[in-house]
Image 1: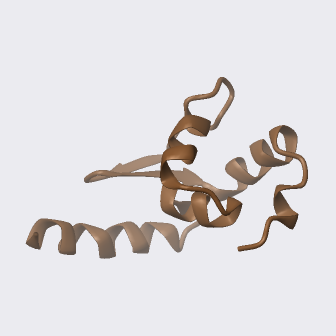
Image 2: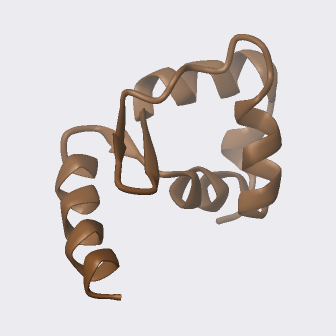
Length: 79
């Protein structure tokens, strides 16, 4: 448990430089993390920029651009 507590703040520090987790992608879209896991497996979805312990971190701008191209209307999804 201590490892996870140490790793999460590191992931959050990374997020401050424009990287987001699958949980944050799920929150943007109003879907489950399981649904995000399906989306990230689609062809063309951006590759994670970094992996910190068990967290994959994506560039938020790249994810937003992919969502604009592949999920029209996602920005209107209630958060």
